[in-house]
Amino acid sequence: MELGLYVAVPVGAVAVLLAVSGAATLSRGWMPPWQRRHIVRPKLFGWAQLLIAAGLGVQLVGLLAVDPSYRPVVTMPGTVVLLLAMALTALAQRPPRPSR
Image (cartoon, rainbow, N blue to C red; front, side, top):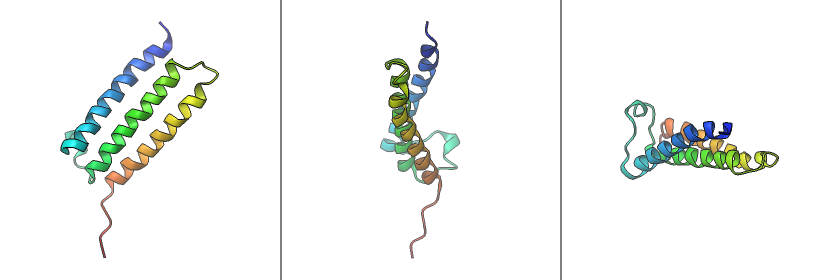
């Protein structure tokens, strides 16, 4: 078995779990108990979780389905999506600005 599958299976499982958690946060406002203390904007956090799942999916496609010489071209958009999701997660943890 190729080394890529040893990496792809756990990363794929994490991506699916994040997508399910993001969908639950967006539709019901539900979050795991360990995140409830820190997140003040659940909807934004749900979108961030969906973006993380999408970024990991793009990374997996680049790992498994692309020739190694073209792999950076495919995985770079996944990295950009993961960085955007990190920024959304940080914004979801910040309290909103007080209105004047």
